[in-house]
View 1: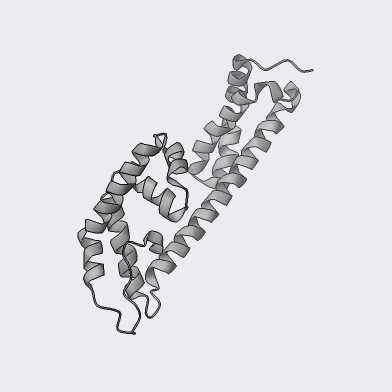
View 2 (view 1 turned 135 degrees about the vertical axis):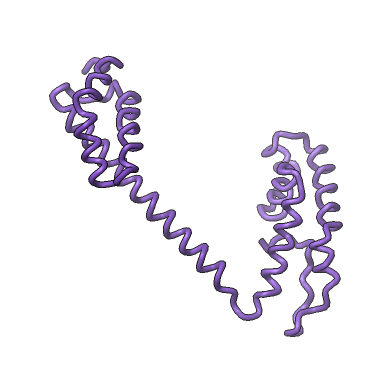
Length: 187
């Protein structure tokens, strides 16, 4: 069993290998590599008891740097993909979807007017279909308190001008039924 590396040994590793690791990370990640350099040594500190023998630690640091680069690259690709998809969806409103978009915006606006805990209570009971007692447990309040808050939140939503405007609108031009703004599954 290897002894746990001391913080002083990690500090010594930093002094000996930080410059070459910085170059390695910079060549692969540009300026973001500087942030990853710090993460390499945070991992080394966190895993002091798992560090290999002293003659293998330089390679271990490079392996850690490589895994952090790969993880950062995966994260950046996912973020880019999600942003592209969000932009595509925002730009593309299918024919006949204008009504749905208006309902979605009205519901989002009405929900935004509520306190965060009341919004979450609405989401849990309406979208996630949790019973009020379970939603109360999630929020850390008594079931009776949750029932009162839910009643008040629903009343506030029903009275919200954006939802009232939707409710007072005539049916869509395509002959479809008027959307019920108190049905919160639109978002």
